[in-house]
Image (cartoon, rainbow, N blue to C red; front, side, top):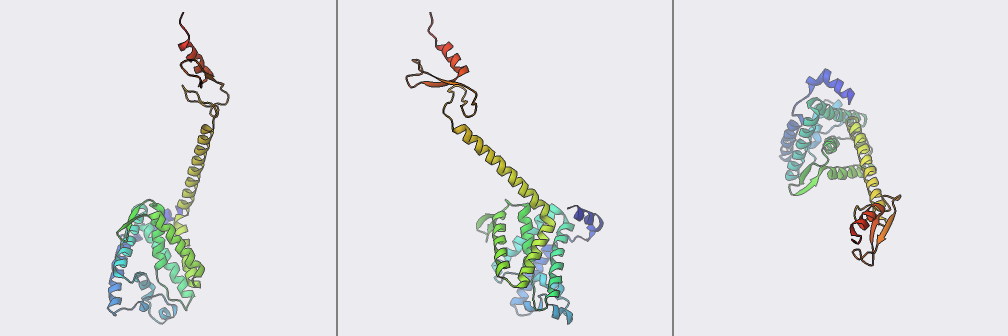
Length: 270
């Protein structure tokens, strides 16, 4: 990501360290305020007409609306969110994580201002953080609901399937929100995705070649009892069977070289 590295060199001081941790704490506060009836969620969503009428706080508060309505699920959701953000920040640095988050937020604001009938939250923004973490740490294992160990790559595949389903059956805004989320993800992870695909392809080709070599080795008619070469691995080699008293009536296979040695070692002594 050369373009992002250049931006970081120029504007790196704008990065907000621990940004998602603070957002998660505010989400928890908003959850309890909503439960108490002091702050209903519908006052926080992105909504163009409400923003134009003076409710400008919606440009920020839509990012603080939790997806889960159950407290235990919310704790799990926020712990995953913080873990993903910390992992990305450790890998990328503060500026790149801040840019990733802000690009997703700003693109959602633009779409919400274009679609006046829509009330928008931030679910797909945080889902893109999850997908980003799963891309960098695919084999990282978490306890699903604090019980079941699952690798991130499998949860990412499940989330991807859910996004595809939502895109097919969802409203226009859902389709656009998913497209923006995927676009934001690809903007930052396209190189990683391409590199991963190439690596998997190379591994598949190596595995296929190995299987092919095994099949060539296993499908043989003759195998030297001394060195183990076969007519499949060494088609130019001649094989013979010895039926001397030591080898028995059924015969023991030898390549030409080791048959000669065998005869010399076991020839009668005068």
